[in-house]
Length: 144
Image (tube, rainbow, N blue to C red):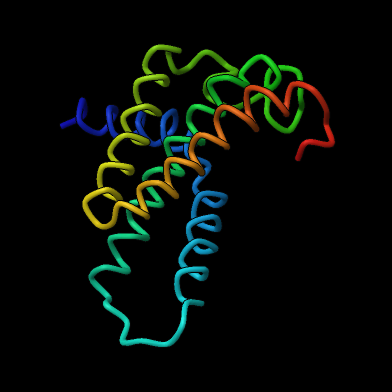
C-alpha cells in the first residue's frame, strides 16, 4: 500500500504540473465558450462534453511539449525554475511520450466527433507547438 501511495505522490508532484492545470482549464473553458457562441440550437450535452474533453486532452499534450522544449529557459527564470523538467525530475523521453500521446488521443477523440473539429484541433496544436513554442518564443519576448 505504501508503494501505491508513493507512486501516486510521484505522479501528482512530477507529472501533474506538466499540464499546468489552471492554464489548461482556462483554455478549455475559452474553447467551450466559443462552441457555445454558435447560433442557437438544442445543445447536445454529450457532444459538447466530448468536444471539451478532447480539447482538454489536446491542450494538456501541447503544454507538456511546451515545457519539454522550454526546459532550458525555465531553468533560468525564478518563476519557472522549479518545474519538474527544469529540475530534471521527469525524464525528457517520458515527457516527449506523454505530450505526444495526449495530443494524439485528443485529436483522435476529436476526429471521431467531427472531421472539422479534428482539423481545428490539429491546426491549434501545430500552431502552439511548432510556431509559438519552437519558432516565435525563441525569437522575441513579444511573441506572447
